[in-house]
Length: 329
View: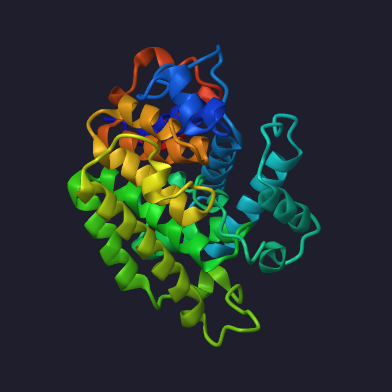
């Protein structure tokens, strides 16, 4: 079913559809596209944002590193992020947190000193999908790699936890988990991992003047993420899915809200992937990041055949997306 290709391309499709709506309010989006949001790619190629660019950086770093260990993956991620930072294609209004962290990473300092430790922006988890898709990882490897790729730029505990949740959501869906069971599985994961700090992957990232232990540090991330997932559960139970999804689960500028709103948009109609993308793009917040995460979930569950075949060659970076998907399908 080509789940990896379906997820990677779904992410890029969502990114492209959400790109023109990101800074529009909901009324303006509906006036232009209707309440279903944008449902067709625009342009040839259909351009993406830094979300897809950085997702490709993570995926290609995973391939370059081989078996992901902290010692092998960190330099591969560092180089991929630095290559992205100086690329002439890095002209899509990238996030300042990523740019500042890359500037600090460039001098070779320990990555924990480059990380923007107070940031939990959605840049932590909008690029983590490849960690979920890479086959053959143990749960500990997947968790550690997800948090490491987040931590290089976004050092807040909630960015780490939301990234791990995103990666595992993708993995479980690709493995056949029913979408109706996903939210409960994620909430259980929050509870199970609440006091787990991955020392071998994160080193001393936890240290803050007001934090006494690494367990205290990471627990905050899991608690904030669990609260965001709880809002998804509440919104789905209410059953009124009309209007701006950001009003139900958050605008998506921060990691746990990007995950929550993407899940909400996906779980309303998980068997209608194009509708999922339109709904996510028709949002008043960080529309491209919300839609790219939602597309990653839909594609992981349904595979490449979920998407219109004509889109495959029109999306920007089609060759790199398919090469990465082919490596893991």
